Image: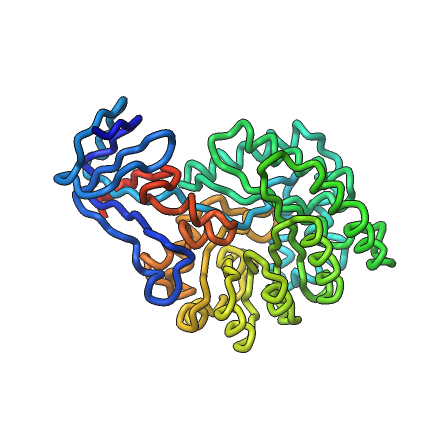
Length: 392
């Protein structure tokens, strides 16, 4: 007899999104649909899943009648700037008037505007404001969320942001994955000597942050490699040092211009490279030949009012492992909803609904190195699941 803590039964359709992951090409559309399903959960993980008529003899402490609803894995949001203070509502109208993202940043706005407000916030304030956003993310179905620093741009404030991520992970039902992103922009005090700031990141920030991480926690390092921000050479210096120290690697690349950051990220074994709106054909091919996951952020393109959507279909057809994320941030994509991102992906990136679901679950988990335990509802995986208000 199989013992279980929970039996979920009377499921209309269950999307198991089976591994192995990440899924590529035609496999991206395989969501492992089981009709008339049941699922047994033990110790927080899936113990058995299948058609209800094949349900094994069991003892379950609790029973949940799904009422014919569809069940899918909880969404994994693998690129967010969850921790920040203040907002940038004034910049929206600036962009409507044609002022570009780079022009706003060069004038001291954008990321730097948020840096000023975040530096002034203490740990309790950062945790409290982020908790409200995280609550809304969970209400929209996200159960695993990556969270970056990057609005401190000083050792003290970047570490305070990391502490906020760790505090939330310890006290919130959602699972948080931390990313250290001091290389998000150049702070005003280093505007005239950017290489000195890179040295600060490499010699002080990265070693200090990795030494403070909780036991058994994977900590990612990330860099915004883009025109007007970090060059490829600066990015390489930071990521090489991060890799030496034991960080896993991520990279913002090709949001506005293709500088070669994607090839660099692939060569360094980055777990994911994110944005990729301007990625050229030869670098799509390099992604396809690698284990690196391409995290696409259509909410950012939408928020910026642009039409240069990432070429998701070309990526999928060539064999790139594609994932989706919100890019939640206070300036260009204040979005907590993975379903909205999936809707954008089906309409503008030309993913099918099944591809969008896989890209928001198993493949998104792969972009965090978690595809062996999250993003699927097959035995052994964490039983993070959603009951949809629909049977399909």
